[in-house]
Amino acid sequence: MTARTLPSLNALRAFEAAARHQSFTLAAQELHVTQGAVSHQVKALEEELGAPLFERLSNQLRLTAAGQRYLVVVGEAFDRIESGTRQLLERSQGEHLTRLTISTSPNFNAKWLAPRLGGFSARHADLDLHVEQSERQVNLLRENVDLAIRYGDGPWSGLSCTRLGDEFLVPVCAPVLDVDGIVALSTAPLLHSHDRQSWRDWFALHGLSPEERPGIVFNQESAAVDAALAGQGVALARSSLVVRELQQGRLVTPVSLGLPLVQAYWLVYPQEGETDGKIAAFASWLLQECQADRQFWKGVIG
Image 1: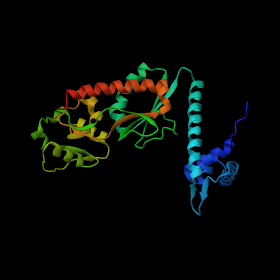
Image 2: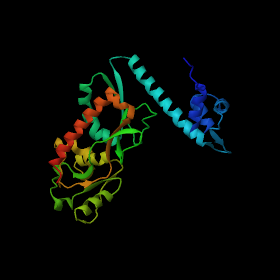
Image 3: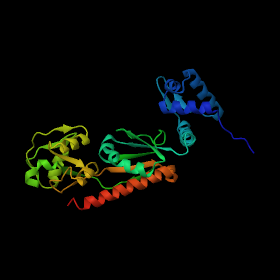
Image 4: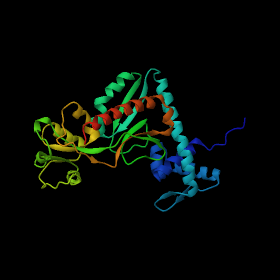
């Protein structure tokens, strides 16, 4: 059997880290070696390959065209090694318990995922569930996250992406507020997320132009929903974030008119995850829940 023709693993690690950081110094900090060691490893790799991988400018490190092509190959190889290693470690630490890490936004987790996740967990007691809340979009090919629920335009290249349904903004308030119909809504206290533009758009879509009036502006949509639950006003919220409270009667829709949104929630995971049993189990459960939500909305929004 012919031996593999492979460069030094340390040299590949030095190159990949330096390429990500565009800095030998930052790569050295990540790898816990000296800057000189990283520079030496990369230089040796360039000599072995017979091509420069970086342009070494006065205050900048920049990949050459050859370096860019090689980074794709090395990065994908490291991603696969990392993923396989993580899976093997999970199995060795306990055959009966497999970790499933889910990334999602604080809003979606608080108002949709967390209240329902117990049902999934009860059906899959062999899974060790971890939920990571973050406003940023995690790198599913490089971070220890199995799947994510993202809000955005989608789909994203290099990932398996499933749109969870159409999203729209809907007015909601607590029953105690006793707001029913357009006339009552036009004088009710309004609750806002980020700014007042969404309410302007909603009224304009339905041919209304009420006078603007004071109302609390929250920087998180879940906070506006919480204020609505407390009877402080009418919130204009994404449908996914209020469906459970509407089903339970904790919120009502004073007017059954929505404002369609272009963006939506998506289930995303690496393409190789399509053959992963734990991802398949979560995806099946998630899509069933979302289908039930869509059926609920058909009887609510006109």
